[in-house]
Length: 275
Image (cartoon, rainbow, N blue to C red; front, side, top):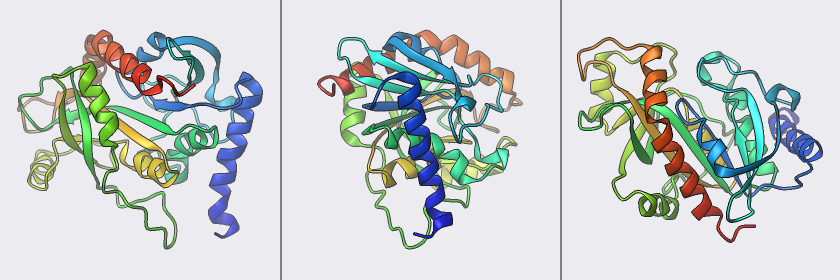
């Protein structure tokens, strides 16, 4: 790997070292990226032993989206004692900072020792049976950005990108959970009705502007991956109504208590015995 190609990985190691020094926590077992609507889950996980502005750690950028927090937290998971790193500062591909910035949090999590990555998002739903406020497990993905965090002849197997055993744990917590295929568009414009129909034809159930690049980076790093989407709105053309970011935020607020409990209990079961 060339110096330029290895630089993002070194930046992640530097970030992990800075987190360990600032938090006093030498390693983490699991990490979470909390997308639109999911921030409240962090408060239910357990005791926060460290929290800081993400920009105080190398490589992290302030959030560019309303509804996203800009902090990093180290949490001792209640009932297990495992350490969870909560990444509240997500960089989206449409911000134009490059793919390495998008996946920096994931690479940092791996460098802290985390073996599991939990990715959440708010998204548009193509299935009309999934009303706004419905959580859906991601079973597979379509990366429609035209980008990848991988460089060179780095052939990472994505057959079971979203770890089946982790999805099973989530089903045990909430047997009513459905599963779907998530498709990432570049954004920041919402998808057109024609693009949504295209997504449906090629197998997508959910559309959004995050997650797939992070999932690929997580698998490259050898992490198990759990993905959960919150349907914040029906995708363009499905309901016939116009889309708005305020609608996304309101759906997240309305669904917050339920999805926070779901995520917190799932994390506890994943980390049971990890500490």
